[in-house]
Length: 375
Image (cartoon, rainbow, N blue to C red; front, top):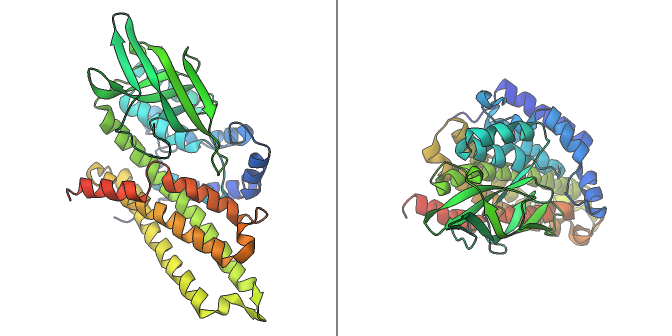
């Protein structure tokens, strides 16, 4: 396990760092929040990312992808975290295409993959149902079969990039057996979308399905759905862990810079040994997280599917815990100004709180790891 980036991945990383720092810095996220942009991101900027090939970065060559691997994509998400750059990359470059490739029919792939690659359509995954909890196995949304066909009823919360999506991949229980995945157009009769306001001001939706008529063409064919979904979510979780790593590195560096500038009692507070000890511990935690994140991405790229779930849960658990610990410390080390809106550190804090819980918090992934190991 080398966990080193290839030349192509290094180029992808360098271009992402330069582009996001110039075009999508923290100031842009503040503007999107203040202007209450409905979709939560700049559509013109997203098209620039599309032109750079980001939506197809990890897709295999047989699906017109760049096959850059998740080590490369992880580097992009780390740059996103550093700049708080808002974009639908997770849902459109990772979740939606991975689901279609694994579970979609040839017709579904032919219809949707080119649209996703060109940024001309968006698909959102709808799984979670209990407010604030990531429990994809507990379903009340159900697909019911009758003499006239199938119908879908239920409600999904915290649908990532759900506002403005053209379709939803919906996980639903079935009265006839295992849960299934359905590709439902957003304009289908009975589908309603409501924006959910979270503290990070990103695109999150609550989607209701009221006796939505389903056809056989809407079903994602691969079964069991739970296995396919887990594999796709693990790739998304690894990317979220990378985003959290980038975010916390930026928070850490800003905090250290502040400690070197702030003077109290005629002394720079960074010279206080107690504060140095706190910062040193955070540095060690960040280095451990980086190893966990790189290990997860390397396992995905190497095709070590038996190890992916365990390594991803280790990385996401570590990232979730550190999102709380490091950002809490950063606020405290900044003193009173740490809680003011004028300081960007508060924006990082809010995004970290959401990243902490998205697709499973530390408790969820520790329990999952224990189950995987048979503890």
